[in-house]
Amino acid sequence: MAWEVYLKKGLCLPQIGWWMDAQFSAQRSVVTHAHSDHVGRHKELICSAPTAQLMRERLRGKRIEHVLPYGKAEAITEDTSITLHPAGHILGSSLVELNNENGTLLYTGDFKLRRGWAAEPCATPQADLLIMETTFGLPCYDFPDEEKVRAEIVAFCRESLAEGRNPVLFCYSLGKTQEVLAALAPEGLPVMLHPAAMRLTKIYEKFGVKFPTYREFKKGESDGHIIICPPPHQKNGILKHIPARRTAIVSGWALDSGAIYRFKCDAAFPLSDHADYPDLIKFVDQVKPKRVLTLHGYANEFARTLRERGYEAFAIGKENQLDLDLGALTSH
Ligand SMILES: [Zn+2]
Image (cartoon, rainbow, N blue to C red; front, side, top):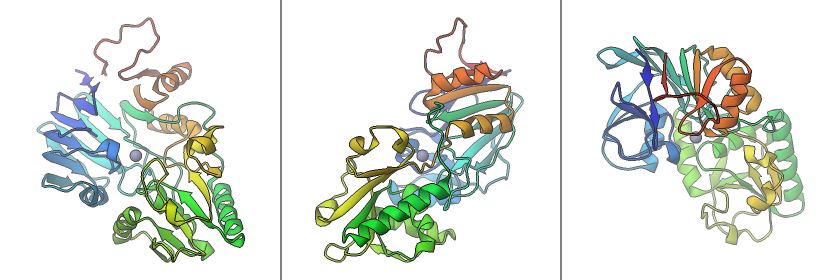
C-alpha cells in the first residue's frame, strides 16, 4: 500500500477522508495554523489549542473542534493515528504526523527551524513520507543571524525616535507582530499595535507568551512610539495619522533587492517565520524521509536540490521537468 495525496486548495488524503489546510469549507480538515491561507469554514477540524483560539478570533461561526495537545497520538480513523508536533512558525503552529500501514507521513504546514521569540520550538520527528513547504527553497534565502537583525531593527527605531519620527514596522498581524514585539522586550521602548494585531497578541498572552508593555494605536497619541502595523497593501488605515515616520518591512522577502520598493518603505529587515534554505535542508536531514513531496514557493527548485542530495523528491502539482512517470504521486 502507499499514501495517496493530491493538492487542490489544500492537501487531500482520500484514504483517510481528511484534508490538511483546506482553503475552502471542507467536511473535515486538519488546520496546521491560523494564517488565512491555511483555514476555511470547515464542519469538523483538528488543531492545537492556540490555533483554535486564534481561528475563532479571525473566523466566527460554529464547527466541531478536536483540539489536540502536542506529542499525543489520537485515532483519526479506525487504523490511522494523528500526532501534532510544534512547527515553530507562529504560536500553535503544527506539523502533522499520520501513522498507519502505509508508514509515517509528516506534513509540515509552514514551519521554522530556528527558535523564535514567541512560538514553540520546532520538532523534527522522523517520517517515511515528508510533505513540506518550500517557500524559501532557493540558496539565496540564507537568513542572517536573528540577534543581528534584531539589533538592526532596534537601531532603526532609536534613530527614528531621535529624529522625532515614528518608526513604523510593517509586520503581519498574526505571528510577525508578536515575534517583533517579544524581540523588542529588552529595550524598554514604548510600542503601539494596530487593533487587529492587538486582539491576537492578547491570545498569545493567554497561552503564557510574555511581552513588553504595549498599547493600542490611538491617533494623536503616537508621538515617541514604535508603531507595529500590517504592510500597506493590507489596508491598515493608520498611516495617514502618522505624518512624521520612517517605515520598515520585517520579512524574509527583505533579502530581495527590490524589497523597499515592493513594500513601499524606507528599510527592510530579513526576519522570517519560515525556514530558510539551509534550514529546509537541515530539516529534511533530521526527518530522514524515504520520499519528499514539496509545495509552496520554490517547490520545483527545492525538489531538484533534494534529488541532487540523494533524496527521492518531487514537487506536488507541478511539472517536475523530469523524464519520469510520477503516476498519482503515491508513496511508499
Ligand atoms: Zn503561515
